[in-house]
Length: 438
Image (tube, rainbow, N blue to C red; front, side, top):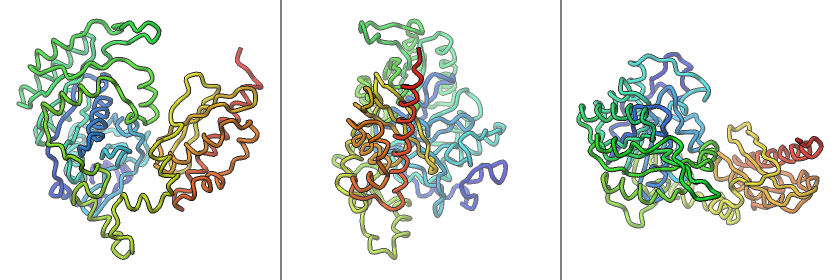
């Protein structure tokens, strides 16, 4: 991929022939998520919709077209670099099987700024489409940046967009800007599938009363301008915000989601594959990613196994149980201490401990790491419960691996990450006990 303004701008290979991957991609529906206004939650709605579709066995990808302000990887807990394949960049895959590509997965550092003018941004967007090995997808969702200029124009004119989901918020200022985006889409001739109003209201947990923090809804006016339905009105929820900050968007389960999913699939239908494998399975289709894996394993006695068979081979039954159940994953409402630790591999973990006296009564964790990290987080929090702080501090990575009945060699460091996080939380609990906040 050659979107770099300098040799070290991205970590992906520049040797890939430009546009070569497009010939291998089979994408049924390309849907853009747009608003024209920043800060309304386009990325959140994009991720929420993609996650819901993936859970229903649709093959889904997300192109993060916000080149200068990408946020999709953080929502899914993904970290680069994306690796180059034979003919294109291989997108990263989320826990639920959503394929994701973003400029933040191509940069040498996530904090690195992309300081480009319009033509360079337009070229980068075209390459995120033509240079990425998407394979077979039912839906490719494009998270558009704010505005109605270069980026949006490039996508609408150079890609086969089937439709647009417009995102707005209740404020009159936001809806006015969104209506500009509606008029842009209508001028170019791209159909608007529907409107999603984000941050529509806040429900008080004590009384159950709805508070319209940003004023009365303007979604009806936007929908009338767009001549399209309101797909959903999503409330403000601090717990959802925390989940997104920790890369756990796929864990969000809103009561509005079934209605949003039903409305979306009715206006952008794809025949559902009953009983089909999820996108993360190798049976999802003979795309180039599968071909590349087969080539890499050609000289191995495991070269005929599926991803599911490999998963069962490399993880013990107890490790698989923790990966699938995600025991103790989450956050404590009345926590004693919360600590965060990032490992050398780039994965991070947060751990909450509820300490009574000198005993850990409860423990929860969240992580942006892989399945092995999830297994280790679940096991460590399970082992720490009902132990004293000093007893828990003596738990070792080797004991965690033994309790999981082994881990793949390349993932043994995940046990160290979980133990380091536990020890950090214990140290913070001890410090808190010695220096209480009045």
